[in-house]
Amino acid sequence: MYTWEELKQFADRCTRCPLCRTRTHPVMGRGSLKADVMFIAEAPGRQEDQQGIPFVGPAGHMLDELLAAASLSRDEIYLTNIIKCNPPFNRDPSDEEKNACIPYLKYETLLIRPKIMVCLGRVAAQRIISPDFRITREHGRWTERKGYWLTAAYHPSALLRDPSKVEETRRDFLAIRDKLRELSL
Ligand code: URA
Image (tube, rainbow, N blue to C red; front, side, top):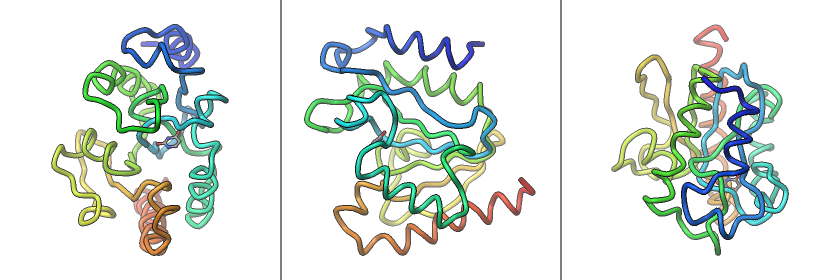
């Protein structure tokens, strides 16, 4: 097993996919290593690439609002992405990039052992929950797999583009809080 610091060192030197040539900083997940809830989004954006920290741009403000609505804060969750480097022009990550990067997420999961994993957006939900996951229809649904509770919510960037989805996403976040209570966490 690796420590978080070791994983970060691997990521900092990583050349497993071509994004290493265009990134400024790899963006490892952040938050509590004892978190009961792990949020998994897609890939760092431009501002995250500059700072090496997840969700520091406008989508991060939206995420903080949703977390606050569910009485959660970044200190008590763990927040990470399917891929750790910024795809240029914010395009979707390719299968090659996702496959190259997924071991980092596997080790983060083994290290943290969250009870709940929340996929933020289609890309994460299709990788973690099911390849044919339809975020519009299936966000807010819960499934249990190998001792982990899995669910998905809209990506905060999607809410910035379409604020009409904010209310239902807030309800999905409230359901995360309720699930934590149900599990007595
Ligand atoms: N969007 C993501 O999917 N991840 C980040 O870290 C920031 C924006």
